[in-house]
Length: 173
Image (cartoon, rainbow, N blue to C red; front, side):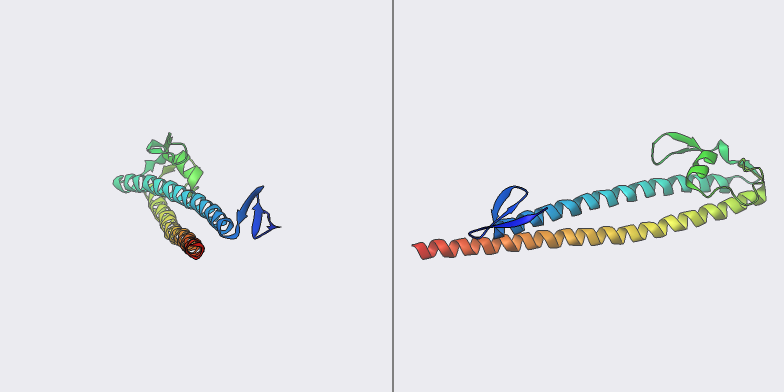
């Protein structure tokens, strides 16, 4: 975006000529659109993370329900990126933690002690994702605050512009 003064209190941006007040509003709206896009991206990232957490919760519950050893491949989960079914081993290979300490063959056939290590590793991964979610929420709140401030500034500009125009009209009478 390049802005040039063309004279007579007029400015040109992207091939369009504006007065100063309208130019500032156009810049404000463009900035608001950029912030809106960031908000959408942030919300989508949070949605994906929540879907990932949901699958980890299912896997964790399944691990806890088995009293002995298990094979993680027996679990059917949903891939948060594709929405397709995925077995537990492929899920963990893709999203971690993998391999689990004690899984010597890295095949997902877990003894009772390996299963316990897996439970701890999954809980650690979930804690990390929850922490990331909290940071994402703070970022989202910051973006929304910026957006609100931009719209407030645009509203103030519009009020001042209207006031100036009203004064000019009343002076002409």
